[in-house]
Length: 308
Figure 1 (cartoon, one colour):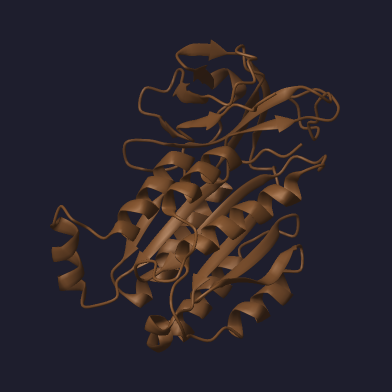
Figure 2 (figure 1 turned 90 degrees about the vertical axis):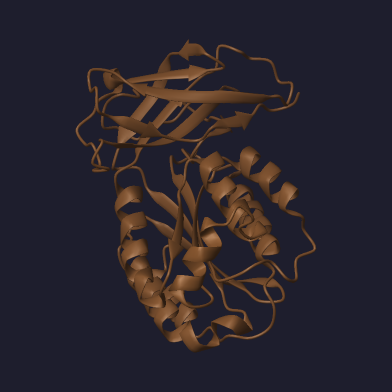
């Protein structure tokens, strides 16, 4: 089993779930897994919480936790890099920022790297070989269009495929860097959103300004911000991730550092839903923190139930 954002899981064996042992579950039991980030009013991460501090609700009905872990759950991370022609003058800085981000991963974590141009290509398969992944990032070059939605769809499918049949508990997250609208995809945004709801993978998006910072700020104040910016924010909000706007290429290092700190501060929760219907319906999920008035949790908005 893998703990990956919020998604229905088919579990494999069972052990104690609130201790330090790696948790597994019985075959045939559908477990909803959540990655939860908790901050205070100053947006500082809240650590030291226990299972008793969390109350989880599905469609307004409280659920009993069957799994809880903090910090120690390994991470499967996908990095998507927009390497279209518009990035040509900024590729060196973008590549170095991504390499530094990768360097913060632990030996127990795995990395997948996707290159997005006119098409989306896997340049480093999901593995523990972080050194090879860093070299793949450094070898990327800019050119062509931007198949943004193709890249997201390919990555979600690849990570979901890898999850099938796995027995270890792992979180999954996706980080996308792009500087503009989709220009080349065959996949529609609605298809990406539907797959994101099904996958349970936390999506983080970084939209890099493609012009002067002042012009970018003026555009963001206007109601009609670009479709891609709106879409990326929607994906992040739905999946419990975050969307960022980098006004300058040199802002990337700070954004990646924030994402890295957040991924390292997640709590992993799991529950067996009271509602056992396998009807493919969308189920709303919410989390509350008990005994900490200022604590603000963030996780996925919901999930798609499995079908019989």
